[in-house]
Amino acid sequence: MTSDFVDVITSGLDALSPYKDDLRIETDDMSTLMVGAPEPLLDAVRDLFSAAARRPAHVTMHVTLSRGCPGEPDDPSCRCDVLERAQDQPLDERQTLAARAVKDAPDMGVGIDVQFSLYVMGAGGHMDEIYGCIDFLKASGTFLASKNFCTRLRGDAGAVFETLRQAFLRFGPAEGHVTIDLTASANSPSLA
Amino acid sequence: MTSDFVDVITSGLDALSPYKDDLRIETDDMSTLMVGAPEPLLDAVRDLFSAAARRPAHVTMHVTLSRGCPGEPDDPSCRCDVLERAQDQPLDERQTLAARAVKDAPDMGVGIDVQFSLYVMGAGGHMDEIYGCIDFLKASGTFLASKNFCTRLRGDAGAVFETLRQAFLRFGPAEGHVTIDLTASANSPSLA
Image 1 (tube, chains in turn blue, cyan):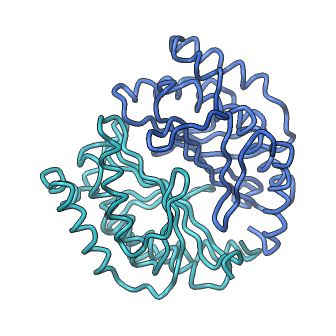
Image 2 (cartoon, chains in turn cyan, blue):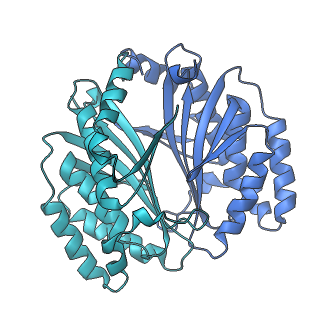
């Protein structure tokens, strides 16, 4: 939200450089595609937005996360131990592990707002997993509010993106098609 | 993407005024919620973005569309004849009706780009509906390209938002939980 937006976007994309060996990264005129395992992928998204949010301008970022899409099989580089183990763990154990990961998240030194929706496709009982995820979110320390069709988070970028990664990986079937649709915001004049 | 962003946003929201009797509209610091039937709702989204896109600055808009969310029952004001009839119609008939609606869409006089994903939750066979929807999209006249996990549209705002409305209403189970996650863009310097 600045006439200097090209510089904000390109310097944000520069923050992806450390991840270029671990992720496939392709930028076009509308968005950037990143393919890889959840650990470097969410770290890269966090670092990109943190770099932009440390500048003075109001910035927002929209992200779609997808795993297990049947029409588009996951690349072998996307392999994730957390997901493979999740299938054998009861919901309450996954909630405990997710809460611990958020507590251990690095401090990025920049406060952000996020609103997001978690979608679990093509399986019965998807609402049980969503309600289980909402219980984790409410106790995560980054929960701000429930809104129509989405959840608001607020906090340091480190804790907020770790909350999103845990919601994405530990809930919904390990081999199912799960997506997150999220908007991040920083430096909004509406909050001043 | 301009330092004058507050004026662009507020004048975009002014374009919603004709819809205030038909829709519940609530704006907070991150987004605007609109609740109502698909006819006025998609018209309102189209008019908001068209108003912003007619100005010179590069603008983007992110929209999440949701129907049939089990945790959040549809308001009676959301009742939609197209959806109620869709349940009895075979896929090819729905594709024909969707194509005709796009052909009859008004010309808004402003070209836009969109990328979007359609999600069908909690039901078997959701990929059949998605592939059926993709066939409609490819013949719609607004199709630009398939990308990882989403579809690119390009054209006049009237035809593009009609394409989105048809994809949202005519595919996936009539009483199921269906969402669309979309980003619209206009005046991007990347395309100059």
